[in-house]
Structures are given as structure tokens and as C-alpha cells.
Length: 277
Image (cartoon, rainbow, N blue to C red):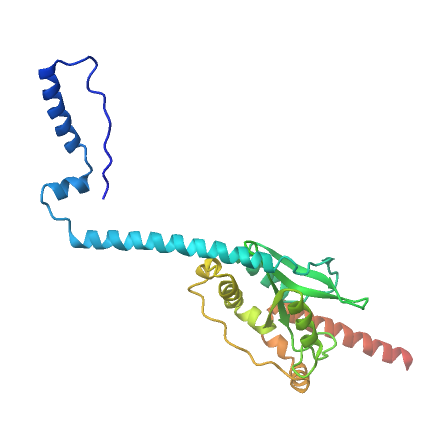
């Protein structure tokens, strides 16, 4: 209920005693008229509709709840920022060959997340090699970092199995990033090609779960949840390679490029054989 009154100067000279009584009565009447509509309705015994009172109560409760939520989020962000201050930082950008599906997925990531870096390098202790992260996504309010990886079952050129469940390479790689303050999220290549928005939603869910910030998730509310995909073993990856499994879902331009390269390679091999004869 509002009760604000407007102050006005209605006298420019000193009034007489009789005039003062009249002026006082006039001022009181004026003040009553200057009360807000809500107060006037109550004073004239006009009932305020119940739905308006209910809506007003709900609106006030929502504002209070939102304010409390924002305060809790600020406190949570402050705690997380202190915990993540020692998170390992990349030393540069890798020049290694990028996966064929990464460029397109980067476009989706940049559409929904403000801090995205591709191919950031981290030094491996007691080694001359570096780890290259496919994508780093950082939550600016807390510094929460996500290492997002895209796993292919085999290499397109050599057809050698990669990211296999029964091999320790990815386990030690995950351990490296987890120990240094990063969260690791791994998608299969097929998931990012066929459901890139659902992959973005999965990342937004991680941010919401850890930081309490649901602003990214709200943008992707209508997007279906990401369907799980079974990890593969070395023998399964070899079978996939033999059937050209990756060409079944990669974009057409990639398929054409791969098949064209293979055709050129086959012709060159035949030419070398003939020259030997």
C-alpha cells in the first residue's frame, strides 16, 4: 500500500487567526485527496478485488525470492572463485590438426557461451609433449573451467582406433585436467554433429549444477536432453573403421573430401606399381 503525499506551498503571506483555521481544514481535505488510489479505495469502503491482492502478494514474493536467489548466487560465486584461483592455465594454442567436426561445433559454443577457446595447450609434467584441449569453456563469474572433448572412434586417414574404453590414455588425460581444477566433459563426434544444441545444453547443465547459474540453461530450455552414447573398445573401433562408420553421419562435404582423397591415393599406388613393372 502506497502512502506518498505531494507537498505544496499554498500560502504566500502570513494568515489571520480565523483564516488559519480555514486554511488548516482546507489543507487536511487536500491531503486526503492526494493519497494514492489504493488508499482511497480502502477509505471509501470499496473492496479491492481478491485476484489483485493475490497477484500483488505473488509479485512481491517473487521479487523477494529473486533477490534472495541473487544474493545466494553471489556468495556461491565468491566461494567458487577462491577455490578456483589456482586452476591451471594454458600456455598457448596448439598447432595440431583439428577434428573435422570441431569448426562447426565451435560456432554453436560461441553462440551460447561467452568465453570459449579452441585448441589450448597445457604442459605435461616431465614430458616434452603438451595436452591440447578441444575446447575450453570458462564461466566468467566464478572462473569455473570446462575441458570439452570430442571423441572419434578412429582416425579418418589411418583408421587407427582412438579414445577406446580399454586404453588408459583418456583416463590419464582426464586425471590431468581434474587434478588441475578443470571439469572434463566428453562427447562423441556423432553427438556434436547430430545434436549440437543438446550438447550445449549438457554443458549448461554442468554450469548450473556447480555454480547455481541457470542463465545459460534458460536459453536452451526447449532443446531436448542429450541421449547417451555407449563408449567403444579397440575391437569395436576397428569394426567401425572397416565399415566407414564415421562417413555415415559426417557432413556430405567431408565424405566427398575423404572419398576423393582415397581415390587419388589409390591411383598413385597403381601408378607406382606399373612403373616398377
